[in-house]
Length: 303
Image 1 (cartoon, rainbow, N blue to C red):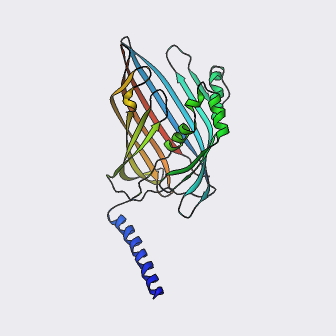
Image 2: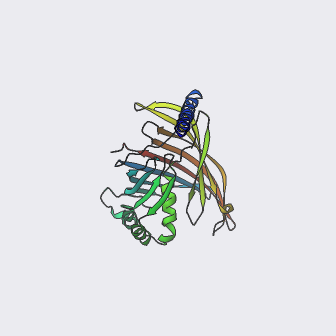
Image 3: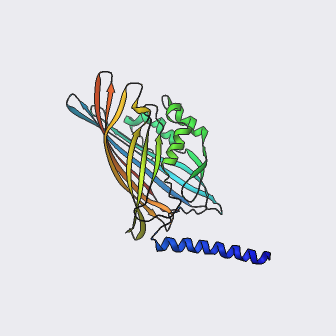
């Protein structure tokens, strides 16, 4: 009797699994999942370019800031539940700043030092080698995150008020900001979901919501890739109140695309652009500002 019940349970389980697979195919659904291989290593590059325009006395003053962070992502172990033990190490940082009336500064940790960038060297150099470890499941949910505290102390000590700028909380949000969490269920064209990223800043706390919409697949570089449209939206926390005044968003727009390699189980490329117009009331003065930002995230092939 026990053997018969066991067979029925196994048959029922196989039926449910096959029904789920066949239903996904019948309704044109796609299951998006990360895949991990123990011992694999890949480089991930995050680039953010921002142009800030401020209206002052009927004139527009524009400054630019760009930074690039190159991560080495190593998978040390993979469990039966497709959860992986991962470490991220910063291998390189590049920063470029330009503003009217000031000398432009550009520095890359992979290049020779320049005299004009000397004041930035200590804080940027300290970031190289920083390691963060965590576990990630098949849809990208992060748990058990641990930061190299000795490296963290080195970074924060090299910056004025560094502990408030670079800390365990800000690094946790930075790592999670480089990881897109996939839907738990299969998706079909037109399905949407959101992921919110918080900015850990003392000057103006804010969050960015990315709304993803599945658009089907396309071929790029000889690969079949899943296409997700991205609609970003910025929200200012605390009703825009800061120590100096109040900031409000007057207008914003943005769009982007994520290409996901479902065969390899990894992000092929992500990019989006935003244009945000804000207004700051400081005392009796009102300052209008426009910030144009482009963000890209790309992975190299695992080694």
